[in-house]
Length: 324
Length: 170
Ligand code: SF4
Ligand code: SF4
Ligand code: FES
Image 1 (cartoon, helix red, strand yellow):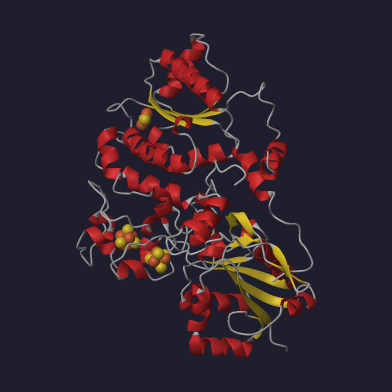
Image 2 (tube, rainbow over the protein chains, first blue to last red):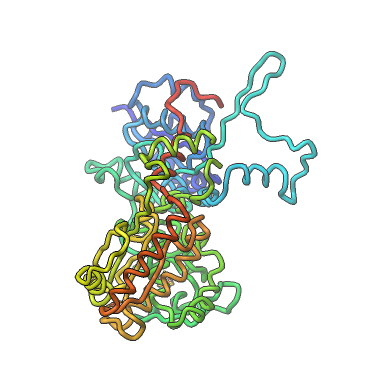
């Protein structure tokens, strides 16, 4: 029997997801023996033309990481969708927009201007910006156009499975691959991670009181944290209650609050609104001025609650940017 | 008008400005504001017809997701009515709502939505006239702000997606 063909591809990503695939180390060798890798730009040399030349559906599965925010990424997503029987959104950016989708709080021009002109580390006297095409010695070169809106993969093409995480852990990656290659693949649209809140698997859960009550919020650098007690109970904004488990609660175990990278469980549509709802329910204060004072302890609610998922939030993007 | 705005205006079916009136989604607590709205009706107090009332058992049941959902599906404003402080049937529900509302307002303004579009009022079962006052005031405010039109905006954003092209330039 021929080995199933798989592809790994990256779009707007930091490279961390690719690391996880590499981190499978010996395990990946076992995987590679069973698989025929037909595209993996980070590690092996293939040309897009090779992919275009394949028959539609020739690839068994593509694991695509990164958000979609350029014409090239959109076209590659469409191409790989067509060539693959199974398309997997791999990692928080492909699943929910990830950190790159925090750019949905800004107009494209603001972003370009900052990065090519105003950032303190930029030296760019002539204010050169990337051009979509230019000609040199009779050869025309094209660059992709940056889109105005950052998108998750499923906001561009049909997606079969989602593997969350920033990055996904080697363990859930291995489990997911085994499930995909097994005889009874999970139903289409599944998120290949547990559908329970992170608190369920957090070692600090034992110390989490049934009735939380916040008099103030503290950020991790503002306090010496008890290494065993639930972080929320210590007034630190931990997104565990509104986040899907599966990571093994690595951050709380390392004395840092969960920042929400696995996204919400299936019962939550908007992770940010959900954590807002649960945090606010448990404030002590009852009068607006006192409430506002406590909430000042969360200086950037949008960046905190939608750190990995602005693209998939209900609003998707700052709404007053008009054409920008 | 740039192409994205044009697409937004074309895609929505938003009526021309002259015919447009604001749409308000109202979440009213069963024990107070909903009864008050009923009373307003029975007493034939005229309030602006732009409001769609949804009855909930308590303002504490208003999940912030409902508010975002209403706005994203085309509401120009969301009104929440609950029992006065100390009078909530479930003791704490209205305080929970107040706290959520305070943070949601900040979040909405960071997302480019005018805070006036979401309003929280305590209205007891006896205050039919207050229902009228608040709704009329809010619809005047929203008329001044103009349409929020999030469905149209989303269509405009997605107009940038390219049709599938055969060649990929890298
Ligand atoms: S530390 Fe965070 S993840 Fe752990 S139990 Fe507390 S809230 Fe949940
Ligand atoms: S604890 Fe939260 S932020 Fe940390 S890896 Fe797990 S899901 Fe991601
Ligand atoms: S019962 Fe009316 S606000 Fe709770």
